[in-house]
Image (cartoon, rainbow, N blue to C red; front, side, top):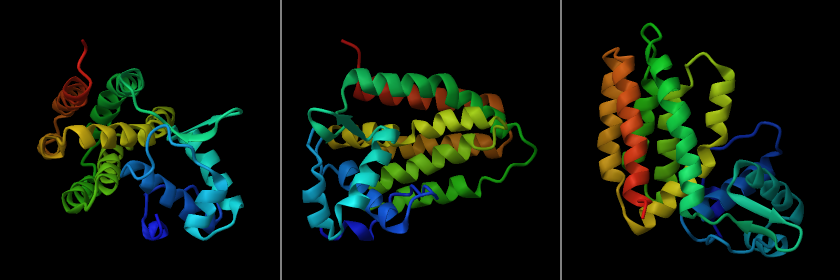
Length: 220
């Protein structure tokens, strides 16, 4: 993680100082590529030494990551990387199944919405050099689909799931790489959006989210 401060995690909380943002991005990137393992303790002094910063930005970054679901905080164990298990993955994806197809269909129903951000995100995912970059690019694609739905509460709820979704996808890809299949599904969803077919967008997105969880976390 020595050069992790050069990586961008795509999360830009405007209220955080720039140094804390950089530390947050570095820790997030290390989590999503598996350098920091699920369940691994996140010791402030060790992270600060590795990143060449004081403990203060590390402490603030860990609090923010706990709020987005990548880190868990315990009075006994301190901060640890969140562990991905079937129950956690299914909870996250169940929420997405309930909310995201509806939001994306509403966005697609807007008169001639711009899909430039969605296209750029897919291109970024195609060029990604590791699972973290690919996962965050995919996250940007999905946000471009639902951000124009016209309901700030719906957008906010889906935004809160984005880091946990990235964690689940990175963990799944480490066992069963399936991003090529998902990239094809993304292109089909974008094509349906561009053709002005909200119902098809919702159906394809529902199938896409459901297929991921069935493929990677099948019920026994």
